[in-house]
Length: 350
Ligand SMILES: *[C@@H]1O[C@H](CO)[C@@H](O)[C@H](O)[C@H]1NC(C)=O
Ligand SMILES: *[C@@H]1O[C@H](CO)[C@@H](O)[C@H](O)[C@H]1NC(C)=O
Ligand SMILES: *[C@@H]1O[C@H](CO)[C@@H](O)[C@H](O)[C@H]1NC(C)=O
Ligand SMILES: *[C@@H]1O[C@H](CO)[C@@H](O)[C@H](O)[C@H]1NC(C)=O
Ligand SMILES: CC(=O)N[C@H]1CO[C@H](CO)[C@@H](O)[C@@H]1O
Image (tube, rainbow, N blue to C red; front, side, top):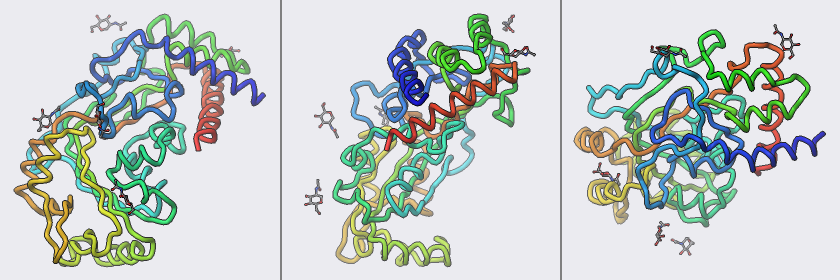
């Protein structure tokens, strides 16, 4: 049985390439993608981390299929995020006990239905060296002996979703292209390959919502004992109740073992220059760049509000294609096969 399922995965892996009928120039809510075709490698087809490629214009280039007819007309809402504030987006600080929590934190806003560890779909293939490069830290600190704080400032640009409030699609709300409906009808409870065929042809998930924009982020590395002290202190006091000197000290080489370089999700070089110019901190005899300098600095946030353009994917929600199956027993069987595949991937990738 296990062997059979493993074979099926291999089949998906090879044949998925054929789904590339439609390559989206623009991301589009309602498009279906096959997450199994690039499990562990999704950061190659979705711009979520600074990449070094010659064409910076794409945000998602995952092969996708249009399966819902009229979904964009009837149900998708796409709009620019309102900008009546100094800065439109969020500023976050996350405490991460270990590397796994750091990955989890970075991909906190990426939801893939039925996956317990959605971040693995993006990071499963990363080596320590790749991870270090993406997070802007020295690879010697990517070990079990360190803890991390991730600071991130994200500027939201466009938000798209299906429906007005809920992102839930019900079978009675959708119309399928005929070819999709026909193959959905061929799914036969008990027959794994009928689901595999369907997924291979159209996908496993559809895009139910996303947010684009750009972000700056920085990773601070600590020894676990110092990390615990700082975490405890900030938990008791709150960032805004601590003097700026004290706060600066925690995010300086005084306490941190290592300061990561400031990265942008899109890898934009212009932003790098801006950071070097504006985010310098002098603290006693230390000179370094810190995102914390933005904390409460209206003038700098105002500038960033303009500089962070629509260049990367900041949030994503993928839902399974289950609503395609109006017949309940077919739908349950779809879930069962999908869940098995996901479990195998999550076990096999680390
Ligand atoms: C980016 O790619 C260029 C050309 O392939 C290479 O010279 C450069 O070192 C790369 N930079 C990074 C940060 O990987
Ligand atoms: C990384 O850290 C090690 C040990 O602290 C050091 O020897 C090495 O030069 C550093 N590498 C880079 C690229 O900074
Ligand atoms: C990088 O960001 C700057 C400032 O917002 C912008 O002018 C420039 O077009 C961006 N570059 C790329 C390659 O997107
Ligand atoms: C649902 O599908 C099953 C299996 O293909 C079939 O036996 C059953 O009649 C279908 N139910 C309905 C209401 O069409
Ligand atoms: C298949 C389907 O529902 N097509 C409709 C899509 O929307 C246009 C414009 O509203 C209609 O004319 C089509 O009939």
